[in-house]
Image (cartoon, rainbow, N blue to C red; front, top):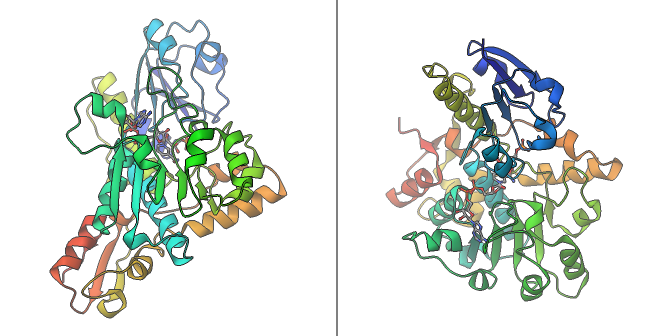
Length: 383
Ligand SMILES: NC(=O)c1ccc[n+]([C@@H]2O[C@H](COP(=O)([O-])OP(=O)(O)OC[C@H]3O[C@@H](n4cnc5c(N)ncnc54)[C@H](O)[C@@H]3O)[C@@H](O)[C@H]2O)c1
Ligand SMILES: O=C(O)[C@H](O)[C@H](O)COP(=O)(O)O
């Protein structure tokens, strides 16, 4: 019987994989060659590095998949040379990250760090996360600029701008993978020169990978006069991060931007389907079976406009679904006691996405507002 090994941080892993073979799990981040005896299929998340050191001379492994968007924990060159196929859960948590950015920007607007209604958000990386973020911001009628040289070279039809143009935007939001080779490598993409160009009226956000910003240069910049507003979800060298960086952040969270219930379960669903395909088995499990239903959210039309949605209206609608300040507060308090980065991530709370929420509006809202609410992802109850 085929052996499937999965990381124990994969939500509903047992429920999804049971029946597809001889299934077992290993503790997140603690994979050893001993776990891999006769294993053909390995399913991980980003805290498990998969390389020659871990796999050793395992000849049985045929397929590795990660229930995450990022793939920098997989040594792709080694896997190719060893003849082991790999896949990822591309796009699984794009909405979760985009909603994290929007929650942060609504707080920054409330605290007069930015005038969001008149701001331009520059997005570096126009892939799944960057595109989702652009869609949601556009629904809120906020200007966006997208920068993605690799996609530009591949003929992407959207209007894409340079990194220099993004560095002039009111918000600079990073959504690139961590890469170390090629002309578009992202390691320290934001270094001394770029940080010097970012002024105190601007916001710098990173929910990509910590290594994309040169943290030494970042700390220097934050110690200089007129530093920008800094919002970080990811850090260099996780989980052993430089905790002093948190003190420079307006908002900081422990790499949970994509940890919505939907984002994580979508990841499991995607890798499950890949394993089914690998084994030529039918897909019998579906996401809806595992997603708890949320009661409708009821708002009064008068409390949200009703003819035009302001940033205050968006706060009324969106912060009850996800308020980043709760994660920021918990992160700061926990890290002040000891470095609990990994533990905080493991025990992350239940957080739902806008697109799982039905909105029931009491009273009349115009067609334009209805369209905006749908465009940001709400299901509208029209009973
Ligand atoms: N914080 C979180 O919870 C979280 C969640 C999801 C993804 N991520 C990170 O964000 C990254 C992006 O996620 P995604 O799902 O959008 O991935 P994606 O692969 O869909 O998109 C990444 C985009 O970045 C572009 N890119 C690569 N190098 C670039 C460069 N030098 N300049 C500008 N653009 C560049 C690529 O062309 C691609 O379009 C992931 O690789 C992962 O590391 C973090
Ligand atoms: O790359 C991704 O998909 C996200 O960064 C994701 O949160 C990473 O996976 P995790 O460390 O949560 O297992």
